Amino acid sequence: MSQRALLVGINRYRIPGSDLNGCVNDVTNIRDILLKYFDFEVRDIRLVVDARATKANIIKRLEWLVAKAKTGDRLLFHFSGHGSQIRDRDGDELKDHLDEILCPHDMDWDGTFIVDDELAALFGRLPKGINLEVILDCCHSGTGTREARGIESLPQELSFKPRFLKPPADILARVDDDDLPVRKLAKGRNPMTHVLFAGCKDNQTSADACIKGYYHGAFTYYFSKHVRETQGAITRGELLKRVRASLRFNGFSQVPQLECTRTERKKKVLA
View 1: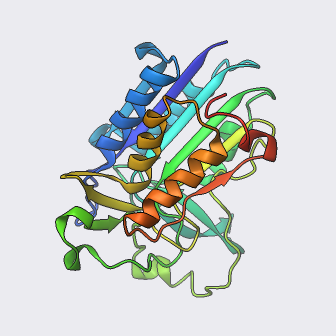
View 2: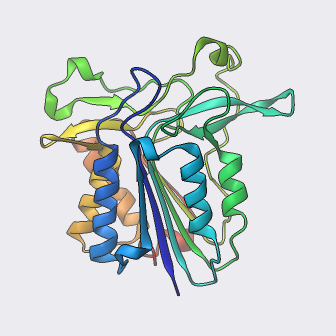
């Protein structure tokens, strides 16, 4: 059995006004728990952050993640940064649904983003019996709104930025129907082996928040906190329950999601 992890954290974006604060802390947090509680070695983990986290570099390292994977291997992909949505296209024709996207450092609206279809193609190559864990601490919202108050009106301890990159007006004009069905990023691509933790519901954003004096993704912070408290000996379902409770107790309205089979839900993380 082999194991590999790709951790991507992007605080710095080329698009003016898009920078975040807690994404690099997120990947170092996940790296720490992988080394301490899940028997990963330093050579098993690759980090890509900020200016190095271009679309080309992320895709290249995703290729490394899935290459030569065999039954019984453990793989993990963690992304912390902006997410967004675009109207899905088939050639020159518009379809009736949205694609969710991950936003790399060199994000632009002319195709420099990672669409769910690209993840599908990569993860779909994996054979059955691979344990693939995907953790996304980014926005899954088509509107970029949420119930909690914005960063300007909160004390520093609870302040946040939504991890949603709002499309420009010409892109937004293509998405004018709030009732369009939404395709969940990376959902259901390999149901025998695929586990997806998402930082929030589809109609919410994930918070980039100041917690105890440092910035983190609120979801990744509490995910890592409860893994540490249990030394990794916690089922996915119980971990989700505790992370949701911590977010709610600390004033965050986002509700993390876990997408996997019932059997996988009862197993421990990366088991």
